Every structure is written in structure tokens, then in C-alpha cells.
Length: 287
Image 1 (tube, rainbow, N blue to C red):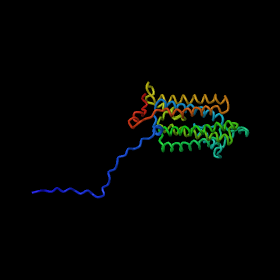
Image 2 (cartoon, rainbow, N blue to C red; image 1 turned 90 degrees about the vertical axis):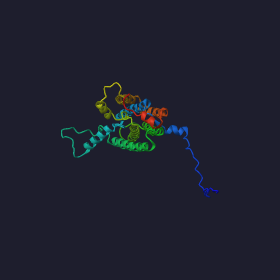
Image 3 (cartoon, rainbow, N blue to C red; image 1 turned 60 degrees about the vertical axis):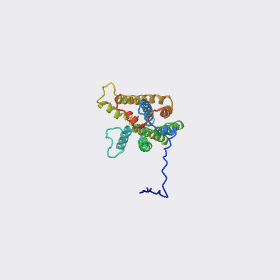
Image 4 (cartoon, rainbow, N blue to C red; image 1 turned 120 degrees about the horizontal axis):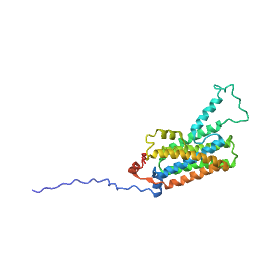
């Protein structure tokens, strides 16, 4: 007895098997620009340089325009004092001598409002752009530093072209440029996660040093960063006051050169590859 084997007929229209494809590798330049940089000593140094330049900038702007480009805590206090002194709810005491009409007030209300407005605008702009592009990416840090340097260069050109006076459109234009640059700088620095070096605000660093439970330990990177930040800020203010006496626009010229140097330095920051590497690069403040 013979048996016959039956086979399943193949369908007339069989779908072809998909051909495996490999994702194209990004170009070396694109990979370099998209690389996230390490939170190492080089990045600390770059942020400390920006802190030093902030001190130079704020010292010169206070002496020239009686307002700050970066220290918005001081500007906020002066703004409140200006509003209080101009309010009819708080008239001056009758025994106080009336100010001379030729004597300007100790701070400029238009300059302070310009600085605050442009600083807040820059923090919002740079902060959201950084969130979208990646706050740790080399490409964003390069772009951010470039966009911070251009307004300082514009402020320098204004100071060289127009006489430096405390009030007026030229003064407000200089203050606006510097405040916008400072807001972008602080937004960039804060997003990097190295919170000990904000490049601008000293009050938080002073408090953090005082409440540090590991203050007296030999190995305390967070404390060392805060002290270095405060030292660079104070030194920058001293240097800024001296440079202002050297010549018109000299403090801002130094700021432009310094910011340009930080921009170039970002090209040499080492990158972090992979999630494992990122975890190793997290600073725990123990060294």
C-alpha cells in the first residue's frame, strides 16, 4: 500500500522578507557637537572665569550707571526703594532736608527696570532653548556662549561711540545688552547642574558654605567650588574698578576677550559617552 505525501502549496503572492538595514552613523562633527560634556575641572574653570568677568562687569556698570547687570537682588531692592520714595503713601520726614534739584538720585530707576526686564527675558529665552536643545550638549554651550558674547560686544561698541553718561538711551542700551548677556549666562550655568557656581549670585553661596555639614572636611568639592566662586566674584569686582580707571570701555573689552576664550574652550571639553559614563560623572561633592 503506497502513501502519498501532500505539501502545502505556496501562496501566489508571498510578501518578501524585509532586508535588515543599519542606521547610518552620524558624522564625526555631528557626533562631536551633540556630545554631552563632563562636569570636570575644565568646566569648573570655565564657569569661574565667567564669574570673574561678572564681577568686572557689575563693578563697572554700577560705577557708570548705578545699577547692576547681573546682581538682580540688588536691583530689586533699589527698584523697591525707588517705588517707595516716589509713592505718595510714604512722604519724606519733615525734618529731612529736601534734595537739590541738580543732584541726581543715588540710583537710576530706568536703568534698573531695563536691567531686570532684559535679564528675565534672557533667562526665559536661554532656559527654554537649553531645555529643547539639551543643556549639556556641546553645540548648545557653543551657541549659548556666542549669544552671550555678542551683546557684550555691542555694549562695548556703544560705550566707545557714545560718551558714558549715567542716564539716557545709550546708557539703557548698554545696560540692556549686558543684562541680556548675564541672564543667558546664569541660565546656562544653572542648567549644567554645577549649582555651587552660579556665576552671579553670592548670597546663596555664602549661606551654603555656612550650613555645610561637611564644612571642615579636607575633601569637600562643593565647599571648594563655592569658595572659589566667591573669591572670583570679589576679585572681578576689584579688577573691574581698576580697569574702569584705565580707559573707557576697557572693562567690557576684557569681558569680550574672556567670553571669547570660554567659547573656544568649550571645543576642548571632554565628552560623556553612554549612560554608564554619565553616572560616573555625577558630582557627589566628595573630592
